[in-house]
Image 1 (tube, helix red, strand yellow):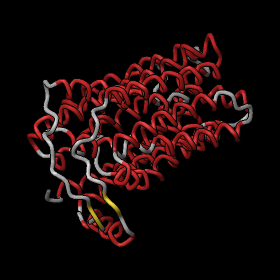
Image 2: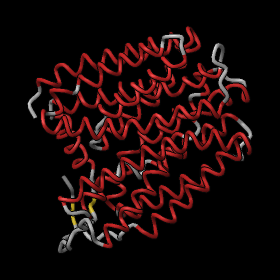
Image 3: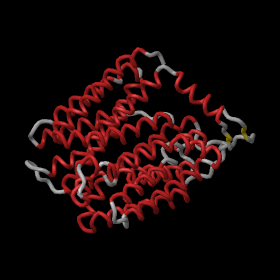
Length: 388
């Protein structure tokens, strides 16, 4: 796969219970938390952006879509760059750069400038999700890889939740600019902590790619019968999830609910359900095989979407809870190519859902998300027949 590789001896790998593993734990918690806090912190502010900048719901969602889209398109270049300069170095640079850009974005007066900066933040953040798995796999003993990845995923979920909830609470007192700036400052602190605690790479070997080696690697990924189906699932399911969370604030802040921004922010506490559902479903998949049961959380996702179309507030919140648990149960992490489709779904379909909102309100959003979910369920059926 690689044109040239520097040969060195492989050192001992990091094992649970050692000082190096404890340092790695702190670093991964900082990286996961800050990455997803910076990525999605503006999501609860979309109704405010629509009002403040005079744009509609679909246009306001570009503050999220520009970030996730730019990040998706930069995943593979970031992974290639990490093969040259090292995983740890790129992850540190990415986190510090994205945090600094977030602080700058709070100072920009124009909507177009804000969107451009959000895209730049996405480019900077690409060096984390696309590289962290390689960093852990190289530096951690195989018996401890699962636990280390679990820490990162848990921190990512908490970061996504805390970023969304925190910014709604802070914005009440500082305004949206102060809240975004403060989130950027928190990211800078996390970046410094990551640089201080992340063990220096000992097993990394510089790798130099050429176009031929990259093309060969891509052909290898696409040759697996199951992977294209998983890429499509990632595209559709992330599109559903982001669409629901992009526009739920618009619905809950409007009549008949009329909830305040801070109150709506507490909906993001439902992210905690994802930690439990992903762990439970992962255990079930390990016993029965992921292909055989992948359709189950997708069917549950459809039920949750349908429930949000009901009028009672309890039904809406209950539907969001089901959607959250089902999405995290279905979600799996794979290669940088999988992540590209995953976040392209967030970017493209998440904004397309705004057109449905503009046309038919929440019923349009729910209908759009349900169509995507049924498409994902259709794909899950042949996926179950693919032999691992």
